[in-house]
Image (tube, rainbow, N blue to C red; front, top):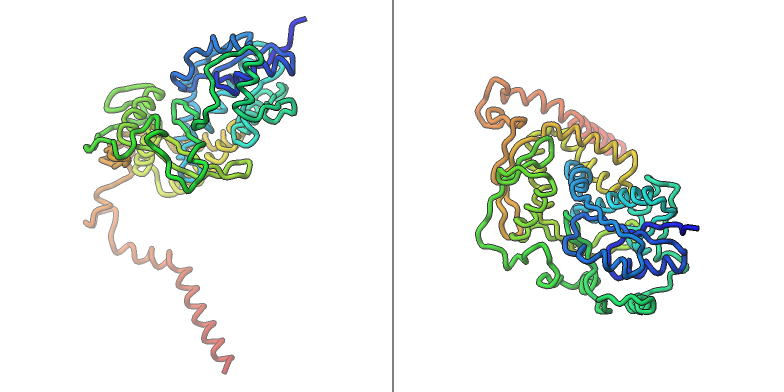
Length: 412
């Protein structure tokens, strides 16, 4: 009788390498490894050999970079969604696209379970499991770090476990930063970052970005063209969204753009400190907002700020595949119908400096904004407007004066 199958979200790191023999030993499953390529780069090298040496039956490496860029990153950018005013959600919106592909592979293979290696302390367990539940409620989820059968508590334990199962791979017990990398960003946790009083050691820490002290002393200009909120070209060269992000990562990284040091509030209730590098994303968000300033009216911009906060929270909490997030995206797609034009920026020493924004859908009228009186606006018209607009304030002040007079009279 054929064994049941489990699909493992596989990175090739120490944790997921250990999980392969652990699943076979404790559940008796055939293990199908699935590495979802969201832009990890060289981290994917040698994975097939490693997975098979560890006992996997099969390995899938699925490239979803374009899907990730167009259907997860861009809706978030169009919504101006930033978690706690700083975090551009790089890990958060990568998890649902990974989960969706895990479910597709599980269906294809007839697997009864999906396994992930996220810990019981982090947000990723929520993001993986809520996404899988939303897409495949019938598939079992195995979370190793919360499983009573999982007894490994350290890297040393995991390395010993690998050796005991004949897996001799180039892992060591030396601690390093815990990193997560994709097309959009790279995150860093651990070592000196675990103490908020410590300054990050940026010379050792940064991967995508040049430390500020080592950036060029001359500003670099970049232009980004948008159509309906989506970037379509950089410096006049048309590219797909994923390639635009890659190009902006290089430009932004060169000039020290997009490094944040944040103590964030995890969904599970604890605070965690991390450093995020998002050079291209920071430029893209800034450019998109510059164009919105020009093309959207005041009420729409005000409401979209609220939408952005809620969109970011839903994404951060792992609720990507929920009705509210889909409804918010529909609103955002509507507001971005006129967000078309060109934004010029200067990159210098970690700063993004606006250098001009143009759009055929601009709501800016130079004749209205100037001090010269035109046909559409007479300065005298403001008098009646101010009277009505300020009426509640005036009435309240008048009533306060009357009340104070009455109180003084009664106190005599």
